[in-house]
Amino acid sequence: MMIHQREDHLGLSLSLSSPAHRPSSSSSPLQLNLAPSMPTPSTPPFNLFHKKETSDGYILDACRVETRSFLKGIDVNRLPATTVDMEEEAGVSSPNSTISSVSGKRSLERSENGNGDDLLDCSRGLINSDEEDGDNSRKKLRLSKDQSAILEDSFKEHNTLNPKQKLALAKRLGLRPRQVEVWFQNRRARTKLKQTEVDCEFLKRCCENLTDENRRLMKEVQELRALKLSPQFYMQMTPPTTLTMCPSCERVSAPPSSSTGPSSTPVETPRPHHSGSSHHRVAFNPWAIAPAGHRSFDAVPH
DNA sequence: CCAATTAGATAGCTTACGTCA
DNA sequence: ACTGACGTAAGCTATCTAATT
Image 1 (cartoon, chains in turn yellow, red, purple):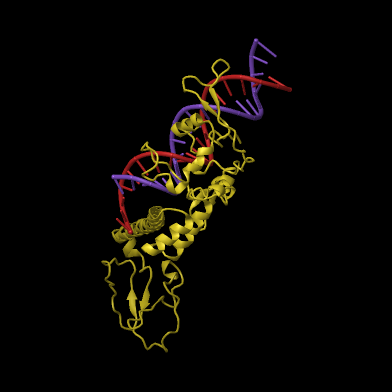
Image 2 (image 1 turned 90 degrees about the vertical axis):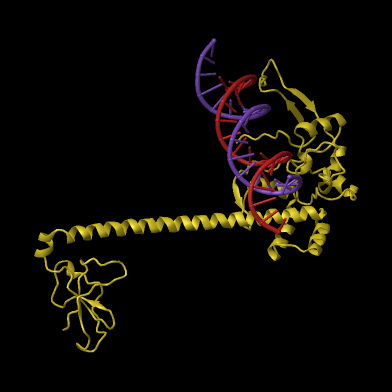
């Protein structure tokens, strides 16, 4: 599999080329060597491009999971108070961290700065703060694996937060309360969407089953009507199933002597549910179509 | 708080091109 | 010189999700 790391790691080169000037021997792309001040980590397992289901049923790209695990311990949302820590962490940056967003404007800004030291200013909790960045472009942050795990655990306990819980969680995660709030909102939305999909699938199957059943019943009705409307066939044949039914217990049984023809398949195997012949028997003609919900039996005392 | 929407990040695919046997 | 295999880079699309409205 072909793997390329276009915007990986700030120490690598950035290729700038217009579509009209595809890389060729004559027009090579502009190569910007962007401050290899940061040690590039060993290549993460990007070749694991298979889907993976998370504990809550969501599908994640395995490579993302892998990358996040690669990021383990990196809290890019941490507030800049822990400068030393972040400098340590900067050495293991990854394409999935916010500071990897080197495309476009930001990358150019960074190249102008000449090194990657200012990356650390992009501590996640402050990235979109109003007092920062003059440009109005919102920067997308990515929660770390640990942060996501903690948030997920918290969500499992209670899918809504009271202000106190929100503050505590925000403090624990090094995020702003608003970020925690937004995360819970989005998480609830995802849960709802997922449930809607499941419900939809269930209803779809129900509809299919009912459609099949309806088709089958319609066909049966058609066949039965055709038989009823053909007098020759109808008159010549003995009632196909001279079934008897006990009106008290509504059990149907075939005549004891009939062993051939359609009547040989009784609806229900006669069982000695009554002692002797104590129960009344009712002739049951299944060929007589009755309106739905109305059983038309010719009561024949016996 | 929810619903709808926006937008950044990234995986994965395709395509063009260069290199090499 | 031609050809097929292979690697690489770039473009594009789909998806996820943080953030906004």
